[in-house]
Image 1 (cartoon, rainbow, N blue to C red):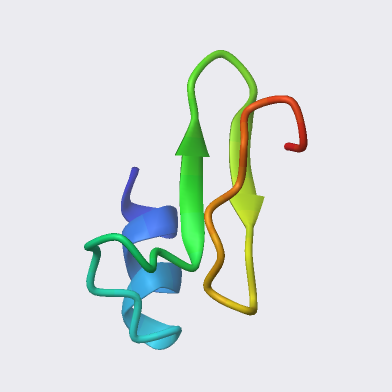
Image 2 (image 1 turned 90 degrees about the vertical axis):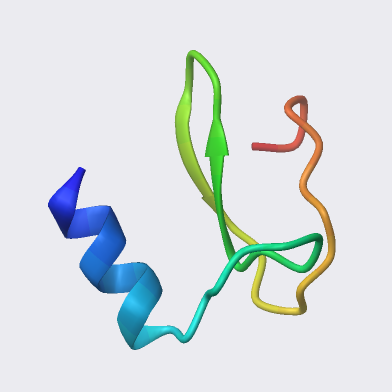
Length: 43
């Protein structure tokens, strides 16, 4: 999705283990500002 890609670019979220904006399968997206991983149950 281009909107999410642009948001990740603005957040300087370049992937890896410390992802800020996470894709949660079947739910959508989850934001983790402190860089910690988000469990699917928490999203």
